[in-house]
Amino acid sequence: MRAALWLLVLFAIAVAIALFAGNNQGTVTVFWPPYRVDLSLNLVLLLLLAAFLFLHAALRALAALFDLPRQALRWRNQQKERSMHALLLDALSHLLAGRFIRARKSAEAALVQETSLAAAGAGPGNGPQLRTLAHLLAAESAQSLQDRSGREEHLKRALEQSGARDAQETHEGALMRAARWSLDDRDPQAAMGWLDELPSGAGRRTIALRMKLKAARLARRTGDALETARLLAKHRAFSPDAAASLVRGLAIDLLNAAHEPAQLQRAWAELEPAERSMPELAIHAARRLVLLGGDTHLARDWLLPVWEKQHELGDSLKVKLVEALELGLDSIDGAWLARIEAAQRANPRDATLQYLAGMACMRRQLWGKAHQLLRQALLALQDARLHRNAARALAELAEERGDEDAAAVAWKQAAQD
Image 1: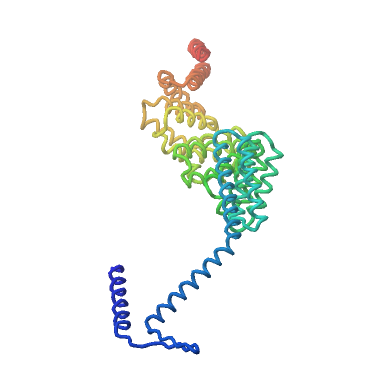
Image 2: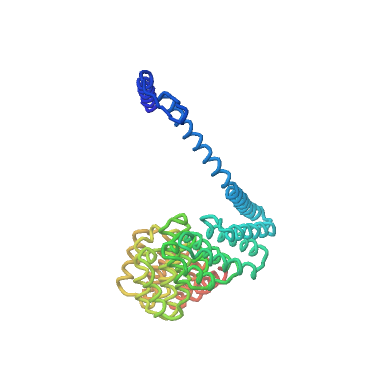
């Protein structure tokens, strides 16, 4: 459409010129004594147009002639800039290929080229970023070559160059690389220091959180590691199972760091509700609280959510739950005894529940019922420790009622386990 419009305009101009020039009888007379020259108006107009075009062409030619030195300088600077970019690409290629010495030399050569361009006043607009990247490539090569002094020197210059506003992303990358190198050197405190310098937004990126998690674990700062693992789980940096396993392991470490009941209670309070509902954590926390001499009633309160879904637990977890509850059977109350008996009646073939109910009855001095439940459990228990404890309890019950033969058989069975 545009081409058609232009064609119509050209036709209109041609028609206008033809109408003007075809019937134009005007003349231009030039008096140059003793001469007189008569020229048609059309010819004068053509001569003026030709003179204008000639003058314009001459001026353009002169401008191009005088601009040759500047063009030559610009061409040389372009060649240097291309050479600088080529050296940067070579440095990156050599670094990826494991040729660290060549990579370092190429990066340093690129820095020399950039310095010469800047001295000539023809530095590229993204000069700070280019210098930062070159220094980082050289520092990465020095790190691979175990040249810490060279790495620190290039890192320092990279951070200085990336301080400009237009190189903020590069500055964040330099800080992250510094943190990674500190982790490689097994220096978690330095890594945490570099990560703390990141802006809040950059510090919550997945790569930064992963490094923070590793640094916190190396520094044995379990609380910080647990908080970071929670953030990574929210960002879906791990699969759900891996995230749950990681959080569970760190929470167990946090609980193990407590060496008195008050510390353990504070550590338990720091856990999130979803974490406190994990069977492994609740069982471990309750067991540790009892072993530290804490309140057994509080330990059973921690175990209550797990007990309410004990039918969903696997065999190994159910055994651990029973062992944790067994530690506080001396002070068991009527409510918990009723819960245990109700669970045992609901699952009469569950040997683990029979064992727990029998041990609870034994602690409450219900000898006959305890003997019956423990004998039934002894026939079906698969866990060696529970089987041994059941046999030892039967031996004690036999001694209590004066049956020496039955006690000897039970003690022998306990010894064999």
